[in-house]
Image 1: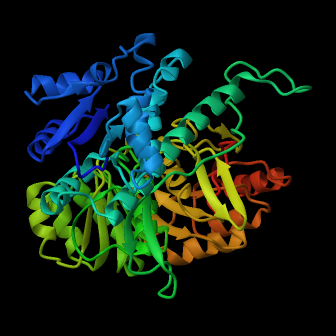
Image 2 (image 1 turned 180 degrees about the vertical axis):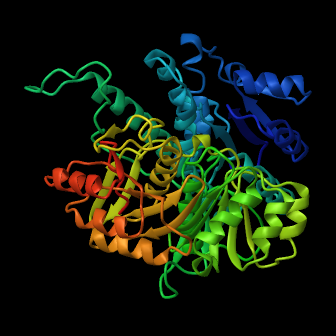
Length: 533
């Protein structure tokens, strides 16, 4: 018995039914007999595709509310048989089992079920597929004799090869098997992580205090990193380094990794880092806003009634650094703003979307990379991971609280004016996205000077003042962490800064407050630090 000698058979059992009817029709036209289960069989029958239900094929009806459908020797014997071995062929003959050439299976959507707010444990348990992974792994193990397809994107190339060659080649079956094992590994990792997190949330270690109500669950004992290759890059951070972009599981809506490139040269490693910095920063702001980033730091931020006005303000903050920068907008880009942006040399533009007229304007800049990111509201999920030699650091995402500045504690004799409070809130939101030590000088709708990445906070103040091309008298200052000495306030006072926002918490807070009072500044403490290393 060989697969070429008799009928060709395929098992189709999929949760994601994208393209399954079209695939099935083509397989039937190529001479395949189709076996299927429950919902997939119903979909094929409704479409007029001839199909044999697994229960009829095995003679064993589904049991346990469908938990057991395909776990049967006639299924797994047909998938796992090594037809190069006489003993396997004899076993199939004695048991009346037919070889199965192709297994097309994708699994219950466990990740999506677990991600639903309020998902109960019993609900997600039912999303743990058993028969599907068993068939996938069996076909992948026996890839020399059986093809396995877990991704609807592979339907077209598989059909093309079957039409042209009559069978899948060894290389194709091997590549499909590798993809299948990755599919089941990712699936099992998702189950492990979700159940592990739930276990950690409900289990108190011996001797530990009982967790208070509402406390965030601890980190799980294992973290898995699942990502698919999106593209190889020309090089990494530097030309002698290789580079590639991977995407996390899920639709990735609103994220830089999965943003759609509408035009321009290929993205570089550094482009992507800067796009992410700009995109995160601009979505911190409520009004129409533009953020220009250079070397992962904002160099100019503006807000206004329109995106055009916002971009002009951002560019004025540091026009020299804006040259060759990355700009992000937090609204659908219109033609006036696009024209303003196109007037200078930029590497990339990113926005949630683009009006047709804006696309026309930007298309004149052939090399300009134009990225459409979509709705950003779901871009931060899971935990924030960073690589270190030999391991990973994990943390929660640094999410800015809406009331950090409005609810900040006044520590000086003078109270900020309403306009100063608006400016402090604006500067504070920008400072969160500037590399530490971060100092931002601003008004309520634009940055004036930014001091980033200095080893001394007072040097960051001096740098921000030096970078300011517009008058700073009456402006405000934000610091991402406390001032260790009063010298930072003294430098700000020389520049005419009127109000300051900072976390507070220094052993020398009293001296820093005294400096602010001596200079007639208003100052508020948020109690929250926003380091960005």
